Length: 498
Image (cartoon, rainbow, N blue to C red):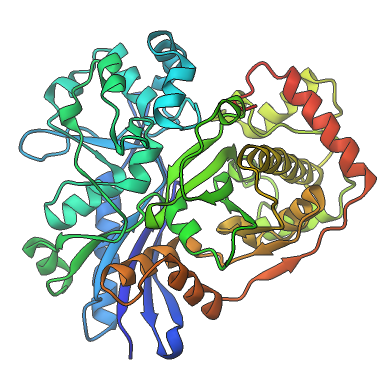
């Protein structure tokens, strides 16, 4: 029996506790120990993450693990979605439930801050895609409102760093997540003092930055008492979930692109260095940290969030299961309308189907007649957005891309995978679905010396998990649809990219 590692993978919709075991011949076997719902809570008109509830779910997951197995895991580690953070007082207590990136209180914050620090200068300092959800704009929204929380705060911890602190009592910030904040300068490899000066926020709130694979400390006596854990190392994995997912790509060589497909779609390549150029700025690409001091040069695109919110709206009156919705979409005619998934009004509308219908009316397009047609239009819009992002990344980096790897929940959506292959003309390799948890687990193994480097980590993934190949079958219709999509992007005054 090989070493076991326990991964906590928290997404915006659900959380998972996954146990990984290294078996003979260098293969990894994973089993889901616990799964639970996640979502924002509305407190006095603001959207927050219920950290105490999430912590109790993680504790439950550890307890389920120790009850089912006779020994503690060799280590544990947490990854989450990006950009969000918590503030602690001088005694290390949480000041308030952390705000969620879709909180309406950030409206107009991006525009306000960019009057203080011009867009291009902010990009040159950070190499991060300018998006209204970024940590820097969340902090500016708090300073704009003269939030007393900032006056009372002694420490800022990003969400995964917060859970690691609750596990160990150690306060650190992990590299892959720190880069998502737009507070980090990848050239100096440190927090950017100019940005804090323009925010009017103390740089002293921030923690020292550690690389993925750093052992932070051991679990506290309190946690051990509640869960049955032994003294267990806590590892700062690639705590940004996409960082863990990209680490677990079953690839070799450099001719690949990836799409980490979930609530958001992150479309890009891996690079030894950040790419911060005029072209990258023009296309609003981002250079986020990766495992092994790499960078993920990519573009954030609104992903399956649109389908998720439509499904929620349809659930009470129609069959809203994902499998049946995709089946209906497969039987619907192609290109009945063109959708831009990145429009600002799709960020957090009260009624997603109504918001999409309004978009079609405003752009002079026919409205979908049924749910199947609506789902197909959404997935076609995502595939077209993927094509544009990949063309921009390829042009900016000079890479000749030969294949696409889709990982995460979207890799299970057979229609999305096929549409992506058709739209781009490239073969799509789908899976593994649990890439984030796998990357989390294997970075723990790397921290404990069981795996030597990123290349060896990916070899384990290739030998442990199967992928599904989708060959492209492009038609002339895709060329016309893409031209129509590009025209729609040019018309769109709220477009957030190139």
